[in-house]
Image: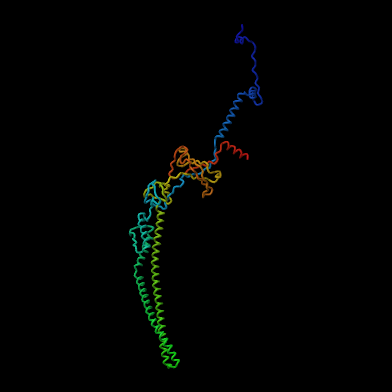
Length: 447
């Protein structure tokens, strides 16, 4: 019968073996651990290598798939291809007249608003009619020139209007003055009288010339007879004196005619000077009237430019702030924007600093974030660079950016921009992969 192990254990008398002694190497590791480290299990080596290679492959794949682009920061202004026209106040004061409403369509030259002034818009039509009448009066002085009512207040134009009225009244007084007419009639009468006197003298001279001719022939005959001793000397001298008297009478009449002609010429000269003086004075008054008309027209243009806001083109008016009747405004306040009548596509104008702009090229992507539409809520706009040009500010460049999708954001929302909007811009110059960028960094470090 074989005894059970328990019985054998109890009956065995052999003493127990002492525990094995553990030894350690120089690194402090036991012999058993050193044996495991010297001969690792093949399964662990295979699995460890696989995990490492997989992680390396994933890292390389991520570095290849992940893009890390170069961007240039800037500011952007979104507006239409034809930018809206801004209308600014040119003077301080109240809006005494607001003649349009927001989003109204207007024609070129339409009045939009009037700023407080002393000339007053309601008086301008009457003043313009007065200028038209004054022009017609200059062309035809026989036409009447109706004056404005005495109570009309013209403000800055008042002085020029008063001077024009004064010149007009002086001119009418000159035309109705009898002095020049009387002087002219007197001179014309004297000219006529002297002309008749000269005609009479010339007829008398013709008779005297005939008498002188007869006396000359008689004298020649008597002189011949005297030489033949037919007349005594005293008789011949009496005949010769009679001949000389006729000759003297002829010369006297010639002298009278010359003197009368000189007097007639002097009368003509006096009449000419009087006429010239009259014309000079009338021309001077007409020139003054014309000068005052021009001054009024210039003053009206300055007044209109300063106190009236008019539409410079056809389009739609937008109020850029809350506007009301009698609202105070200041010089350079932007009150209206005038959008073109024909709908214009929106474009962007990006301003960037000079560093890095050498990498900017036409066609590159531009990411736009508008201040009025937070990017986290509305998304961003995407555009393309269409042109690059310097600005008047040193170290700044201006990029023209097209918006192929218009104002449709990356979140599919249509952004509503009335006239213009501002924001930030990022120009994507190099859309590099993460692996390419690491390679460039490594190459730059080596070089």
